[in-house]
Image (tube, rainbow, N blue to C red; front, side, top):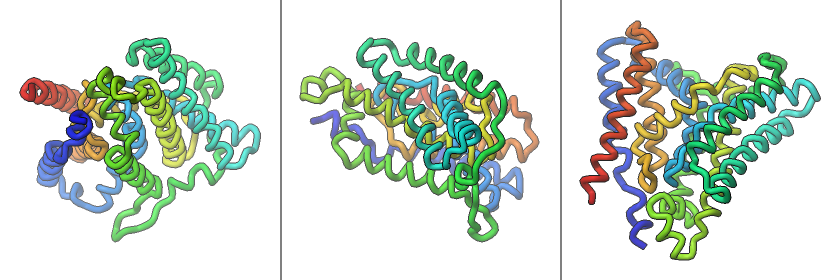
Length: 319
């Protein structure tokens, strides 16, 4: 099947990777602190949560969808984990399981509305963003949950490599990228995700249930948001009801910069990791240069527009 053979470009991350190298080379000339192991460890810590959310966002965008609710669903998962543990004395594994169940249920709801009600993903997830935000504020009482059991913050611990402290949460994020990459590359369900995004009607005619594929993708994305919830709690040591308000756009930015097409069917999840690192490198490098955060946002916006424009031009050129 042609759409399956062409779905995984072998050089899908080459452009983003070259952009990452160029960014690193530039900032290395601007600050002597940039090219240190400790600084690179800090960058990985800063992209850990968004990078994990972006895995789920990648799966959805590969099907030509989008999820605007991912950041707030992540925040709700973090509040569920921390508040149930603090209020009811639940063990860390049970609190984590409840948080994952909540985020997966939001993914299921998104998937059902997209597949059964045939609503546009943009509208569905925009509505879910507001629902998740409201539930988070109501359940937490708009208060940060600070009584967090040690089991919820373990991934915030670190080990040393040379002069750098590497969080266990960063290792988990990298492992998730590797597992997802192998899943998309080497399994039939992973290939079906590309096929649905490339040509859903042709995929349906081959006997593949596009609704089942989409439903599975939104539920898997919900699981990744739940894992990101745990990483968020581990990193800051608390459940913050005000978290997640920009992570949806940051995750989409990482996916787009990583070379995944917003039109679906093209991209590679490892590119998303590179995209997340590009954003992290720019923000870190500009901070070391003393540049205002406003300009950091400006640069990120320009990069996103250029990435989408490049994708559109490449599609037109391939016709």
